[in-house]
Length: 111
Image (cartoon, rainbow, N blue to C red):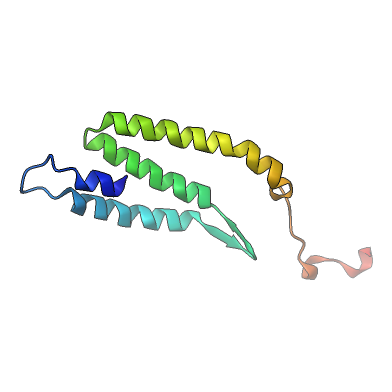
């Protein structure tokens, strides 16, 4: 969506929407990177980071006046996120609320 919005030639010769998109992508990239956390071998926050990117793209589409594109993309993203939740629950059952025990935290007197 960022690329498509940057290529729309409806602006005058003094405005370059690709430069606007590039700055938004750079700033949102830092926000998304901050949302991704790594704990041991697990990575958390990828969906949150992707949602931040989508929100920025939707904001850019609405800001440029492409409301139909923004509404369509919003519906598509919501349908994808809601639709994938049951699949995730079915195929990745043990993913939620699991805790990894650290061998250094185990008290030998309890065994």
